[in-house]
Every structure is written in structure tokens, then in C-alpha cells.
Length: 165
Image (cartoon, rainbow, N blue to C red; front, side, top):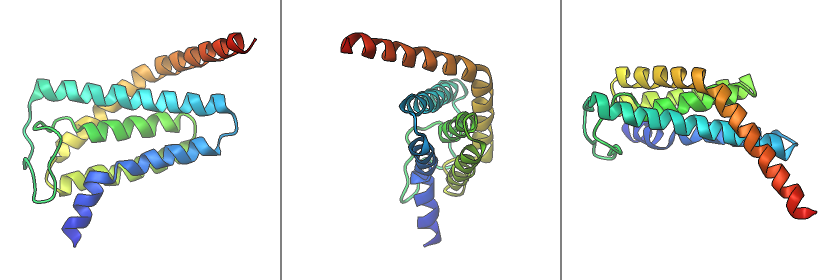
């Protein structure tokens, strides 16, 4: 029973931080704010996970176990963890808007990522590498992502005005 719970959290637990983002977005009144939060968090996650995928191909570190009886990872390489990278980017970018929601997403994501270690598809170094890569990417690129998201929303607003007049 305990093993099934760990595998379930390892496989599907990363969805919990996404629910935290959706809860925060639903709490916003302005559609522009909703779009901005979704663009910034989504872009941050995409950039962090893509970076982790590239780094995996460079380091080519093998997993502790290629698969378990109930769990097969997406790819053969483990370092850095793409799940840890994505969850960290999501939590950090969400914390830019709301620290409590960002912290909640981080804690839930951290539990899911550590479950991947307990399920023996990652070493703790893989998770640590994913978190560090995401900190680096988020620290340097989040201001640019926010600026680009703001410009994109402005362009959409302008197009909407032009199309309705």
C-alpha cells in the first residue's frame, strides 16, 4: 500500500502545484491579470523543463532504476530532474504574484519530487540539480518573461480593440 502511494504521488503529484496556480488565477478578478499569471508561470515552467531536458542530454546520468513494477520514467536520463525543475519554476514564478500560493505550490511540488526519489527513479542529486537549474533560469529570465508576457497581452488587447471598432 505504501509503495503504491509513493508511486502515485511520484507520477501524479506534480499536478498539485498546477491546481494551486489555477486556484490563484480563479481568485483574480481581472482577465488581464489572469492571462499574465498563466503566461508567466507557463513560460517559466516551459523554459526550466526545456533546460533540464538539454542538460540531461549533456550529462547523461543514468537513473537508479530504469523502471519499477508500477512506474516507468519518460526518458532514460535522470540529471537534472525535469519534474523538480518545472515545479521549482512554477513555485518561484507564482511567488512573484503571491508568496503564500507560491510557497504552497513549492511544498506540494517538493513532496511530489521527493516521492520520485523514494520510488527510485531519481537520486537526490537529480532533484537538487533540477532545483538549482530552475533557480538559475528563473532568477535570470523571469523579468524578461514578465516583460514579454506584458507586451503580448498589450498586443492582444490592441488587436481586440481594432477588431471590434
